Length: 75
Image 1: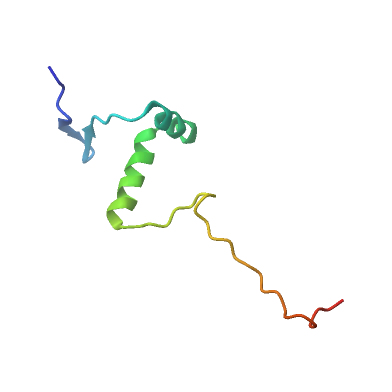
Image 2: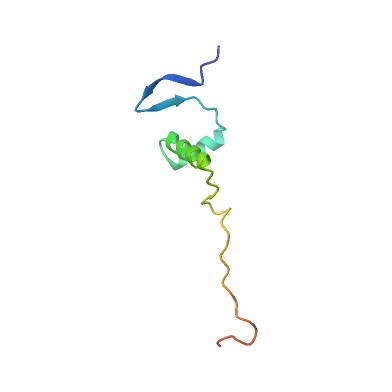
């Protein structure tokens, strides 16, 4: 039948969990590190803290430089 989602043995206060991930997502995680569990653990910790700050190029807000009003240019 199906395997249990949680293993009953603990090592170093860690619990082994079986997770089903999209293969493309897993490939992206493997590209970042050889230990995907660290990435997943870190993401869960940030999610539980309610941290919504993402540090990727698509979500950054651009800091605009103020432009002086017309006639005040230093040519």
